[in-house]
Length: 432
Image (cartoon, rainbow, N blue to C red; front, side):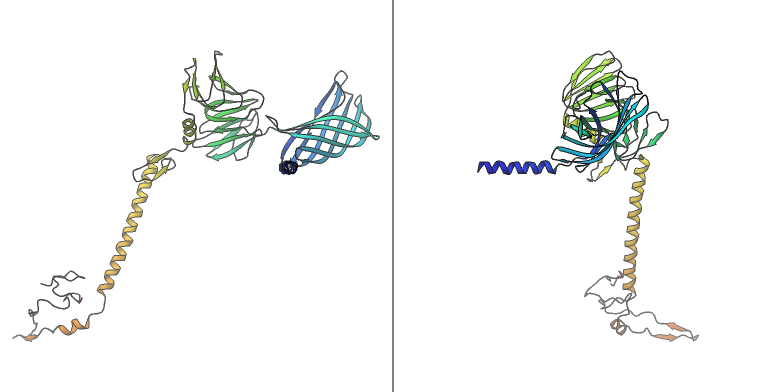
């Protein structure tokens, strides 16, 4: 029973390994078993897509103690795959030997590669051995392919621009844009951008921030950024006008004022902070520190959860009112004028609604007033008598006061009245 259980677990584990997906571009270095050899690589890489690999290499070899006119060029291409974490590849290659700058020997060959995909603490690598075949004999070597450490921007909202290294014009930023060392990033109001690294590190850049990418760090000139740094085996630095923050696998927030004053808040891990006088303080999680032009200030305690929430909410302020409605900052984005326009729009909608209601009410009343005359009312009314005076002028007889103090129909609109009614329910005519 135990044996079958372990067998089943082994099968499941093998299936798990086989199900892993590896994708990315890996920079390839190949070295033959030849001591004191210098290598120059030109577009040598392994590209993985869903565990399938394309292999391409092109490099130059020469002895360090000899003239550069004697060298070997090696190139080739092929395909491969990863099963679990095992890598296998094959293809064809060409080897050219130059003496005093002139090609002396050339031959075509096949090659094979066998290695292992390793998830290191920094960037994943594929390491193993390879061999060329010449006249039926192998020429052996080792290879190492390291996944490229690309940096790209993820657009969240707002507007940002990028100044390329060596460039003079700021270009409009876009989602998925790749950036590199010495590129500068600038964000505007109500903006949020994220910097993504191949090793999983993530930097969130807030509004009105200016920073420059450095080799092994960030130079933060102005604004605020949140850093979630993965362990890379080397110290990462955040350089500000007044401080240098050295970190190794941590989560923290750095903000820089226009005066250059810097605040560092640690959410996880440790950060070494130095001022311009080289005074160093080690900050732990839950601590913050201000660094001014005169140096480091007193270490303070912070609420990690509250600081993280404040960072997330600071670009999305909200306002609660007594009615219970929540207005986002976009309503007040244009100041009091925008708020006044909103009030005017509401008043216009209310007025239009009231006009429509009054019009409907008037139409209903007119429909009632235009109802045909009640025959019963016609029968109960007597035509007032008339007579001719001495001048033969037709005189209309004034209405005769009726002795009926409780008529059945209104004399004004003909509406049938309720018994003992004092007013007409339709036109409001007083009856008594």
